[in-house]
Length: 129
Image 1 (tube, rainbow, N blue to C red):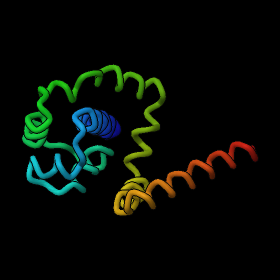
Image 2: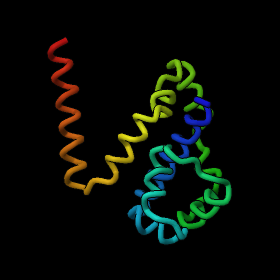
Image 3: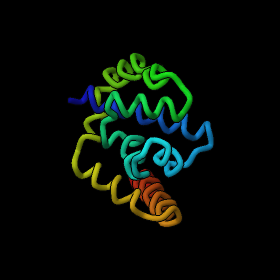
Image 4: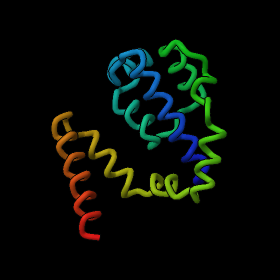
C-alpha cells in the first residue's frame, strides 16, 4: 500500500506544479474538469487517488500529456525506498489525512498562521533538544 501512496503523492505534486506553472487556481482547474476545488486539493496532497479518466481530463485542462504526471516517478520511488518509505506511511495515517483536510478547510490567512505556528513549534523543539 505504501507504494500506491507514494505514486499518489508524486502525481499530486506534478499536478500542483503544472497548475501553478499555468497560473491557475484550484477553483479554475476544478471548474474546467467539472469537480469541486476540494477534490483538486485532495489530489494534490495525495489524500485521494486520481483515476485514469480524471488524469486524462486534467492533462487536457493543463495542456500536457498524461505522461507528464509520471515523469520522475521511478526515481521518486527509489528515493522513497532508500529512505525506508517512512514518508508514504506517514501520509497514509488517518490522523495525517484528517489534519490535511482540516487545514484546507481554513481560509488562506488562517492556514498561513497555522503553518507559521507549526514551524515555530518545530524550531522550538530543535532548540530544546
